[in-house]
Image (cartoon, rainbow over all chains, first blue to last red; front, side, top):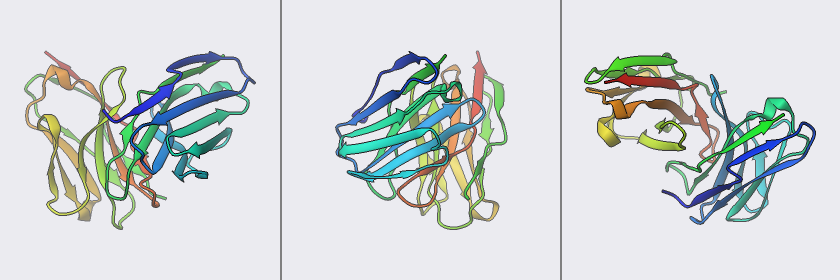
Length: 112
Length: 113
């Protein structure tokens, strides 16, 4: 398995609280991504990064922000969690063009 | 914008039956295509990929897929499924640079002994 660690693996939080999810890689890959997985929707891209301090929005970015201050870490922040953000969040990494992405184990987030 | 359609949301098969899962994408330009599998409670793992060349791609665990450019399709096949193939299967295509993936909604496969 690729060296990707997501933390925490499970979290329950209250509506309106800030939440930060962490993705850490040991592969020195350039590209990192955050997806959310919801039944009937597959995985949808939230934000991605193509280098340190270089990030951009994906398909479902509203309510989320990201930061990448080091190659190995990509943080996803929910500024004020809502129930609609209850989901499973996956981090992925990719090294270069025409290669496959590798996924982390996922973080199950429940907003109550 | 690119989109991916998986036609079967739930498939139930008996062991040794043949499997074919449909996948169509919308954009007609150069694409990279993937099938990922997610076993219960686990992360996504790559089954197979297509970048160029032979349109018939062989992956792990006896799976294969055929890229048909004229039909914008990348269907997944396995001649004889096993109980251990019970999982959710996702078709995905790269879109818009930076290797971003667009996923289909997934197909849940249940294989009964």
